[in-house]
Length: 97
Figure 1 (cartoon, helix red, strand yellow):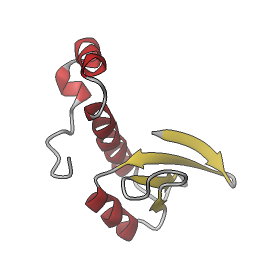
Figure 2: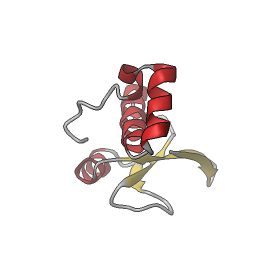
Figure 3: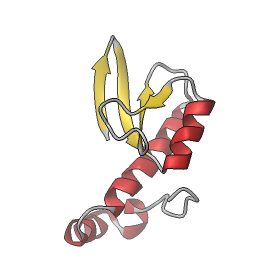
Figure 4: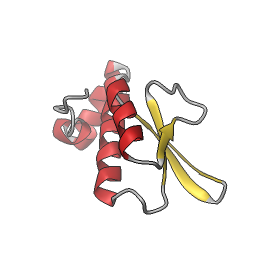
């Protein structure tokens, strides 16, 4: 996940399942292919109040789970101990993961 300001608008890069990335781009005008990222797996979300907060939170949760899932086992286990397995992987049951 990457958060930055570009052209006066805050943006966040979020990892997605490839199919979900395409669907989100079709649904939301302010979800675009990831800037300087692998466009198959990453979207850039323009944070200008056009996307409901709950949807942005959902996208952040999924992105977090996808990134954590690919971490080394030792790092994943540390996060599970520190935060609890359910918090680390709270949206792992998603059909996109």
